[in-house]
Amino acid sequence: MASLKDLRNRIASVKSTQKITKAMQMVAAAKLRRAQEAAEAARPYATRMDGVMANLASGMAGRAGAPALLAGTGNDQTHLVIVATADRGLCGGFNSSISRLAREHIYQLIRDGKTVKIVTVGRKGRDALKRLFGDKFVKSYEFSGIRQVGFAQAEDISNYVLSEFEAGSFDVATIFFSKFVNVVTQIPTAQQLIPASVPAAGEAAGVDLNGAVYDYEPDEAEILKDLLPRNLSIQIFKALLENVAGEFGAKMSAMDNATRNAGEMIKKLNITYNRSRQAMITKELIEIISGAEAL
Image 1 (cartoon, one colour):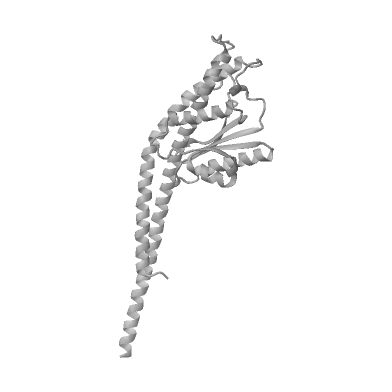
Image 2 (cartoon, helix red, strand yellow):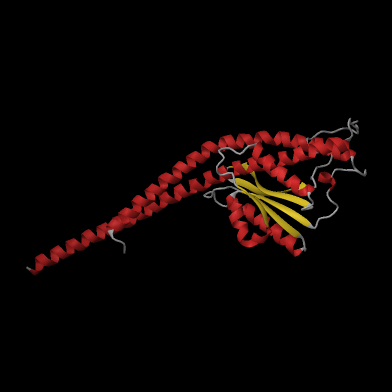
């Protein structure tokens, strides 16, 4: 059995840890509000962009000359997998759930005989996947030194993906991230970026065209050629914002659980300490009484 001094030290240590987890929970809660607002503010723009892309893509249906970012290369042998996670831990299963979804997708591609290339955004995703697929890594991004992830970071990733696609390095690009729902729910999501995955015309933005046909000037191919790279940046930016909100939500929930667990541990340690102290007092009394009787 641990001595009373050891128990006192353990109780003090757990109390200090509880203060730290409580402070981290409050910081995550403060940052979550701003990140959630940013993620929710980006959704209408991305949704509307999907609607514009869908209308333009419907005009290209069955026609030759569609941009490669929309139609693809005609092959799906080489896949670029972009895994976006957080740079820091202590956020429950947030990072591991994204990495697990990406890992299952990569294994399936390998079983199908496809060539896989991996780009990671965030240190945790890189560490989780590099042990298994180190030879398939082509690029890694970390934004730990940046206070708030912005469009510039998404554009850097987008420019790299575009340059690699134009160089013929891959045929299909998919990004993995976590869609923010609320503090306790973040959904690991896979979204195909290249060829662009667009919904049917009118569905993305909830617009019913009632059979109307737009006349574009310049034609749809020219507009898509300009919009598709921009849409790629928008979709990556949306994924990064969703990830930031999901990270803080998961961290807030994890630190709340840790604080409550620390409270339960302190209660148990206090009970053990009091029982040990009482047992020691009882033992000393018995020894004193026994000694007095012997005299």
